[in-house]
Length: 77
Image (tube, rainbow, N blue to C red; front, side, top):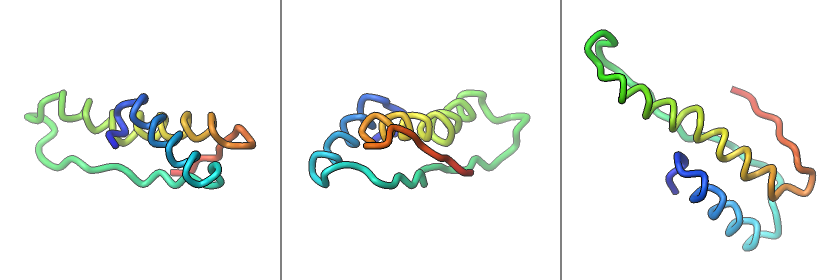
């Protein structure tokens, strides 16, 4: 699953909920780090990092809340 893609995340959550009867806990553990010279690194590299490390987490939480019986989430970083 590509966590940058909200539709893919929702489909994976829907499949998991159908297979297991719902969702009790979500642990967001996707992410990566960028190394190298900030001055010479292309901006696109940091955009990709934000897509995975931040927006990927948002997509996962939004999808989880939609299928959670309680309809809410707590997130820690």
